[in-house]
Amino acid sequence: MARFIENKQQCPLIYDTNWKGLVSNAGLDGNFYKDFGNTFYNDHHFHYGYHIHAASIITLVESKYGSNQWFNDNRKWVEDLIRDVSNPSDQDPYFPVFRSYDWYHGHSWANGLFGSGDGKDEESSSEDYNYAYSLRCWGMATGNKQLENIGSLMLSVSRRSMNEYMLISNDNTTQPERFKKNKVSGILFENKIDHTTYFGMNEEYIHGIHMIPITPASSFIRNNKFVKEEWYEKKLNGISSSIDDGWKGILMLNLAIIDPETSWNFFSAFNFDDKWLDNGMSRTWALVYCAGLGGCH
Image (cartoon, rainbow, N blue to C red):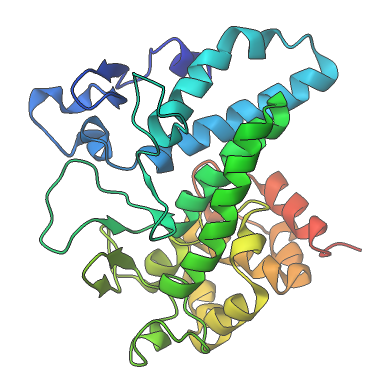
């Protein structure tokens, strides 16, 4: 974390006085899409959510076993990321109110300052609610009840909206009947839905991008009914057996929501291959998640 807090990462953050936010310096050379377009406010809620979640865990552990020095030294850095994405105060002169989250639609939009003929879009529902979960975790870890409540409210609203627009069960009455068999939106635009991703059309990509990262919030948003339909009707159970990279681990950990024992057996197997873990995913966490859902004896 020190690399980012000291701003020594590959693409350091700078403060933009025009749109009032913390952006990567990557796009200043004219390459707008470098660093996922962060310089132009793409995906801030996706990316900053991971940092806030990590900071929450450090703070929680330190409060139990340390001196709270890390929190005291780095609180402002973490909360500046929060102010960039979901500043709740119209009295803050440095950041707009809720830059990313659209309370009317009930989820965030990933697009920043880029124009689009079909309007703004959202690809990864899971990284969206991961931000809300991370905000809630930070509030809980630091005793900030306001931020905890905002995160909880965002999660609650997202749970409803995402199961209307992006995670599509058989009893969904919002999406067109012909589209429901896809089970997930892929990319949800304001004007259309496109069952694909920005990085490929493999089914594990289209479904997996709505799963990562898998945390306790996953089983809150992704209800058992939907996960069961997606796994069996969309034949993810068959797809997973032929995948030989990190997407395999994502699909198999998502399975823990409805079948923690099978998921536990997969991750605890003697012949488990680490290449089935997605970047940033650990086998330890996978086993803890399965166990928490009842997958170990």
